[in-house]
Length: 463
Image 1 (tube, one colour):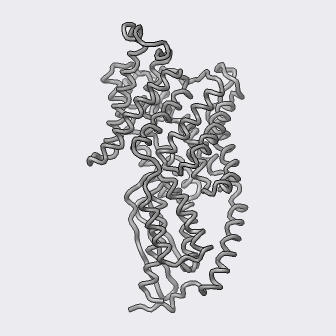
Image 2 (cartoon, rainbow, N blue to C red):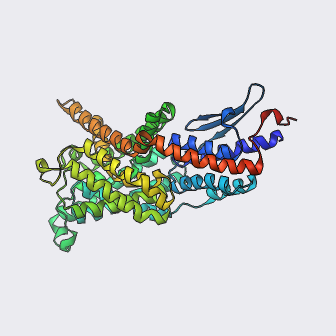
Image 3 (cartoon, rainbow, N blue to C red):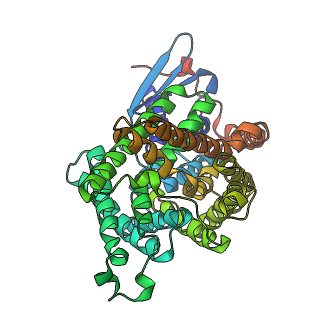
């Protein structure tokens, strides 16, 4: 084999990993998939070394006498679950169907050129209604659901538009949060101003007009990076996990400053601290709101369209079970009354265990169903309530306590959601990995029979 061919194989391996990193795959999945791609490329795992970082991937193929190293930058970070699913399928298909290097490279090109599953306006509308679903979970009525959705749709579309004009990503987040909150504030006049409310039909009157202000900017809350951060930390990828956490914190800070500025402009007196979030809906209303939120956020994550009904059902299961465990007689609801933390763990764990089996029915990675299903449980309001409390401190006794209380509740809920999602890796890894390794081994035996052994570095021709 010529050195150029080996370099080409390393390039293909790095491109595989970079697509996953830029599509928001967790580090454990990136490593597993790159190892599978390396097996297809006939690269011996004993001589293969990976370095996976947020912005740079490195692969080294070396023995005691030879060493080849390649780097790949990862710059366009986003969330694209369709790409993750396609890369996973490609690595298995390439082995089973004995792809040539040209076929594999063309498949990678096709994946990178594939447009996102939804147009910008579809994403904005989906994300907007997802925020409306959140609002229902916080206790708003259905007129407020539509007001929240309207504010979120317009704010989200602005959030997507500004970076195309060269605006810094974090500045765009702050502006979008400001505009969405301002629009939500304007909608309160429809219910609170007698002269306006008097000419509107009854179905446009909301008894919870302030609730949209709590949820209209939640399209910004980076639920996937939060879950990936916890997952990476649990798997021992501390460096990548900390970068994800810092990026998440900057996004939430930008959102909190935008909302805080809007509240100052509107003259609202610290609504995020005083407005109750305890819902008193029927469970069918929770189910509808959860399905809307799960499908809405799925448009942001660019999942395959065929999975929308699947994640809707997943969202219903996760949220309704979370609410049943969380709520109870102490707050006027039906349930076990065990609190948000235990409820979040129970809801995410239940859907995660179900998806262990369901992923085989729909032929997609576990993450592509579980993540959109649990995102409606992410406590975004608690996160920016905590930040807002610290931003708005006036030296009054108890302000730090309020901020820390919300921060701790949000952190525990996020950790529990991530733990629930990670259950297959934590408790079933041995069984899942055993099946994967057996399947991969059998496929590689057949491939070796056709194409020979792994690349031998001593046989590589260096010019």
